[in-house]
Amino acid sequence: MNHFATLLAQETSSGAAAFQFVLLAAVPLALYFLMIRPQRRKMREAAAMQAALAVGDEVITASGIYGFITAIEDDLFWIEVDEDVQLRVVKSQVHGRVTGQPATDDDTQDDSDES
Image: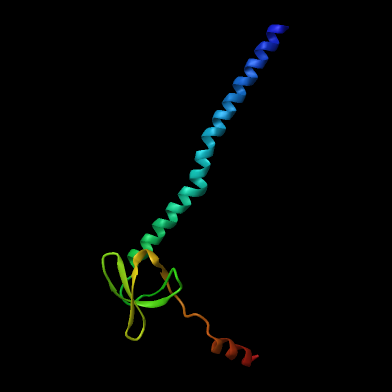
């Protein structure tokens, strides 16, 4: 009976060791799928969007400045924010292309008058 208890204790400890090994291997795998992979996908999408921008596109920068691209250099965009006012911006700071016009106060007042 004593030998059986010893064998049972050894098998339990080897099973626990195997579980700990699997758990130890699963942590980096989970980090890859939950953190690293989505971040890389976002970086690829941002690089593709920045490469697709052309002169004349309306963009918004990471700091919230709207403007039109007037020239493209190696890693810079020249963005016109007003007549004869241009900013030189690093490509990585262009957040996205503007697809629609933002709503103004005049647009919201017209809708309320029609009611």
